[in-house]
Length: 433
Image 1 (cartoon, rainbow, N blue to C red):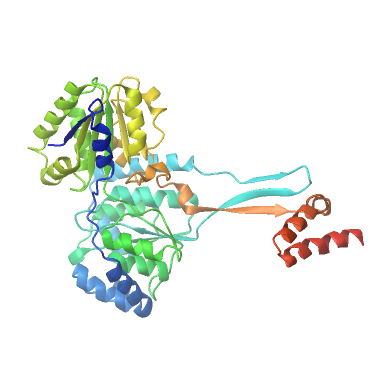
Image 2 (cartoon, rainbow, N blue to C red):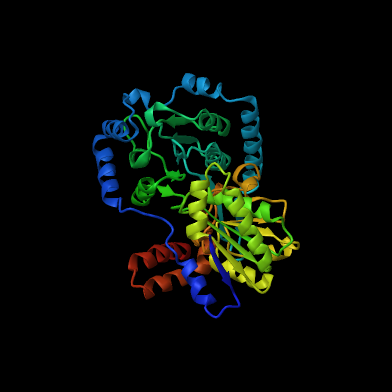
């Protein structure tokens, strides 16, 4: 059973703080191992990647076989049913349309001094996407990572996806094809991240790496950051549902389990203004855990990290939600739009009884790559902005330099940076000669 808390209890604040600070992720110290793997890939390139793939994925191959050929991709995509293909294409269309609206505009203007200023946006030239393989192989994540990159204008998009024992997921390859991915490599782990970051004879380096992975992949992304950009270091999934007693307890129970079934370290929380309703939801969860295919995983998550919190009103619920800053926030209340305005820290908000979080995982349109572990307090989900960079633009006329140059010279002198000031003074003197 989950933890039951009530904001009216004397020890609530201490209990809530304990819930907030609970360590949910078992993060083994893999950094030393990952450092060795990266060093090996940098030194030996393809040979290191091939050796490590044989070791960890039980797949022996030559360098020429790392990249899926067009014929291989076509053969795998042909295995996908018409129904699954249609679902992927619908999801891709909605994701593409949503992210197209995120594209920022270039700006340019002339200010009062006569200087022309502005900025322009341009995409990174190449991006690499990590796609987990094996049991955690999600074609939806391919769409969510690849489509924003292509909408942003990334020229070259490469995917790395481990294929343990040579087995791949046809849906992953079809999703990559639909999203416009240019290259797909059957490698994974820290060695794949290193190959994307530093390049090998067979894999050209990229500028940014996105996508989820295990502890080794996360450690590798941390280590290559700076050489390349990364999206985020994601932790276990989490969902917070705020309810006022008007929602169907079984619907809410399923919403909670939709994240709990991801990982035994995932967290599903319910905040409710109705204690009786909270107990009904908990009972509905227990009933569903008897039949869910992933009941062992979901049950462990609910038992170890789940909570039902009773509060006095929805304002208090919003305050607690902002302290939690959940990855996914579901508002199963009658006046959901009004409550949404008060919830300012969340990766994604799902508004009203008819908006299950699972819609956002697949076909809603917004990205499902979201900040976890309370990082929604200061960061956002994946978007086209992750594949764009802003370059500022400045152009002085003689008149503009005459108007603002002396101030620049003065500030340079105050910082004892003589050449800075002289570079301005030389031009000002040239105006007077």
